[in-house]
Image (cartoon, rainbow, N blue to C red; front, side, top):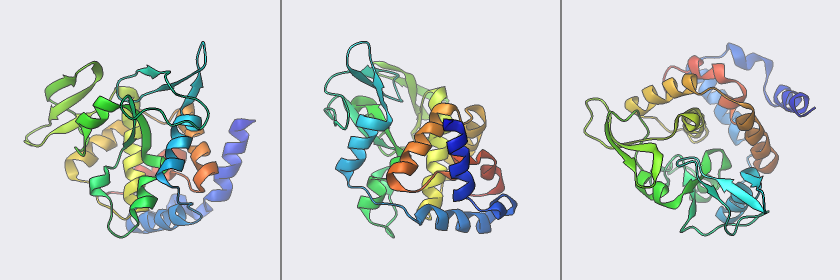
Length: 236
C-alpha cells in the first residue's frame, strides 16, 4: 500500500511532459517545481524532524539514530522529536552552509531536509565544507573507518569520500540543491557524483525518506523519484 501511495503522489506532483525535457529546460522546470509549496523550516524544526522522526529507529531498548558517515548507532538522548547532543551527533549539511546561495535566505537552505543527514560530530567536523570525490591518497577518519579524507586525481585540493551505501544519497542531495537554489557543481565533484548516482541507486529507504520530507516541507527530490533525469542534464 505504501508503494502505491508513493507512486500516486509522484504522478500528481510531476507533469507528464517532464520526461521529454533536457538541459536548461529541465533544470528550470525542476527548479520551479522544487520551490513551489516548499515550506521553510527553522533549524530547530528541521533537526527535530531529522533526528526525531525521519532517521529515528526502534532499538532493543528505546531508540537509535544511525549516522551516515561512520555507520554508528547513537542511543543517548534520542527519541521522538528530540535533538541529541551536538557533541556526539550532528546535523550534516550535504551542501555546506559556507557555500549557500546568496539569492535565498539562509534559514530556507539551512533547514532544507533534502540535504540534511545525521552524522558523527567528529566526522562532520572533518568533512567541513570540503567537496565530495573519490579519494586517491588520503586517510580514514579517526574512529570512523567508513569515510576517507584526502586528494583526488591531479587536484591538490582536499576531498571527502563517504561510505559506499551513502554515495548515491549524497549525489542526489547535491543535484537537488543545485537545481533548487540555482547553484553550480564543480567538475571534479560532479564527475564523482554522477558515478556514485549509478553505483549506489535509489533504494526503498531513500524513497521512504523522500516521501517523509515531502509530507513535512511540501517538495520532493526529483532525482530520487526519477533517477533517469540526472542523465538528461549535461551540466549541474
